[in-house]
Image (cartoon, one colour):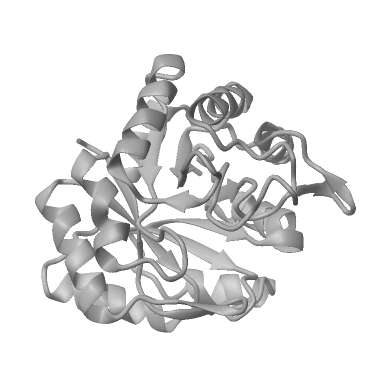
Length: 272
């Protein structure tokens, strides 16, 4: 197996300081948290931004400020920009950070119920996101909440909007999407092109069970406050790095080494 790539989603768009006071909000807080995660073994950061009031924002100026702070502390970390933003944002809002030409960005391939809301991704938006990424040579991470979204990936390949080999992120356990039942993960893995790489982001209680399965099957793992705020039942994590440390321990126990950022770039075919 290739070395394990650990991605951290340290901020997200929904979690608040009220829910977890350790949530990093400011550019300095996020940069410090990224450094802790990097030292623990993470090689990729799935990045959302918050404004000065702590609300989700896709303003490129805010992303630029955060990215600069991060790169001062961890120059080689892979930064993956979220184009998901927050529920209710327009296409233009969500696409704005792509103007910064990141090396990696998320690309969600369909609409899904998301708790009490709807994560809206009509196919014309998907195609426009994909085209921007292709023109700017940004590696897309194909974000999947249910099987139909994989069919959209094949459509985009056929239309020349995304290029193989692809990297998939299976987000399982969101209320409204596929649950974190291990059978769902196996089903999705068996549905993607054979030359693909993949990762699982288990939401809440599914984080570690699905992470362990991914480790043993040759996939990769995402953790972080965007997906889960508890290090164990009823106990808030004080840092995203705690999740990374736990996944590293599991992986090494199974005999799988941890990828550093430049090793992750090679595995993921990030060449920018």
